[in-house]
Amino acid sequence: MTITPARPTTSTEVDSPPIVFPDTVAFRGFFAPVRIEADVYDLEVEGSIPKDLNGSFYRVAADAQYPPSHENDIYINGDGMVTMVRFEKGHADLRTRFVRTQRFEQERAARRSLFGAYRNVFTDDPRVAGIDDGNANTALVWHAGKLLALKEAARPYELDPVTLETRGIYDFNGQLKSRTFTAHPKVDPVTGQLIAFAYNSSGRPDEDVLLFDIAPTGEITREQRFRAPYSSMMHDWLVTREHVIFTFSPMISDWERMKDEPQYFMWDPPKGTYVAVIPREEGVAGIRWFSSPTVMETHSLNAYSEGDIVTADHFIANSGWFSQFPKTTVGPMREAPPFPKRWKLDLRQGSSSWDSATASYTETALFDCPGDMPRVDPRILMSKNRHSWVGALDLGLGPMPDFGPMGPPFNCLVHFDDHTGARTRFYPGPDSAPEEPVFVPKGPDAAEGEGYLISVVSRRLLNRNDIVILDATDLAAGPIATLKVPFRLRYAFHGTWIPAAELENV
Ligand code: V55
Ligand code: FE
Image 1 (cartoon, rainbow, N blue to C red):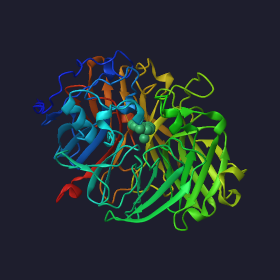
Image 2 (image 1 turned 30 degrees about the vertical axis):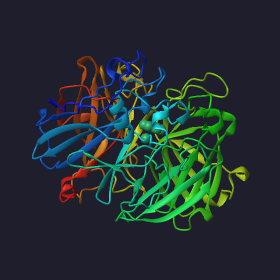
Image 3 (image 1 turned 90 degrees about the vertical axis):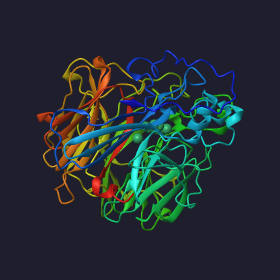
């Protein structure tokens, strides 16, 4: 492992504080910042890496270059740290790099944190007034030959997919006027488009939502705007071949409140939940609204349209996201875990405005186990799928790994077969927690689900991570290969895969 030496600073700062991280759940133990930019050529491997696994796996974590400027900083406010594993001929080479955001560079020059609470400009150091606060820590998307590191609070950063060098803020060649861009755009596997949205696009709380169609060439071919019931966290969504579906949940942001309350989002259950379905072709003029009990979508599996019926599979929680945003308008509440649900929405029953919505959806359980971080085969996204993979928490499996800064960990990965209803799982052992599984098709012509599942597993007692490669439709068989990471990786959110053929000529 080589550690990149810090560049000599050009700062004339003399009062930068000592480097001491707070003793809170976001910064201690297995979840302490890692801050290592590493290159490990040829990871040690148990088992053998399939020879047809040829390409790069990426995942992005929130790390922390500097201790936060305030004690109660939340995990999701950290600096984007990307892990890349290049697979080739049965070998795996690992690289980790911080995303060189404007925020990262400013803070490095000052040798301290300058940005304050998550998305709250009133808590920032005056020295960074007007500087982009994007930390590129949530997800990675590969589209139009560009690898983008995403944070829903800001615009994307472009990375070199081979070296992980940061190329800078990416505004789609000047076409993206929004100050923000979702961390969960969806690549349409049929048209090659990137379907995306932005909320709080003015850079502060507002009720407008922007919708983008982005061509396979990276050109924004359509931008639309509609009004949300309120300004709230819009993290994930669903896209079918014909519709997009938003679940609005009352994780409310409010500009006036931010002036004396650092927490950007506050769970305000009386404001309720609404679901919007928008036809992709007709656009926002055809919006249909539905009512809902007060719930929150954490992440989506997949959705599909059949005539007037839209089927939406996603993880739904009966509470807000209190592990990050504990204050609510109704006093202390306990966070409820997300469960995988199937909603069926009948478009004939929807209303043209949210405040006149009366009809709801029907809900069934996909299976009865809390979880999140779902994946389907990317080649089947937006159409009816058979296979899905999720991180899950099965209390029957044995002792639980400790809670981390994101709440309860997963203790297994689950494969769900929608044709048979069968569930199989990979259990990594008692001190271990797997992260979001990333599916890699065996090849362009492989059947749906035929391929590998890659997941980073924390080995809590060993203070390091493994990366497991599983047969995607035979999780119970255990890893085909286990890559030994000789140090600890900070817990990540989302990842992606780029086939080797697409990494040529970048
Ligand atoms: C989420 C994650 C974020 C964020 C907002 O998983 C929502 C949900 C990692 O950053 O800024
Ligand atoms: Fe997410």
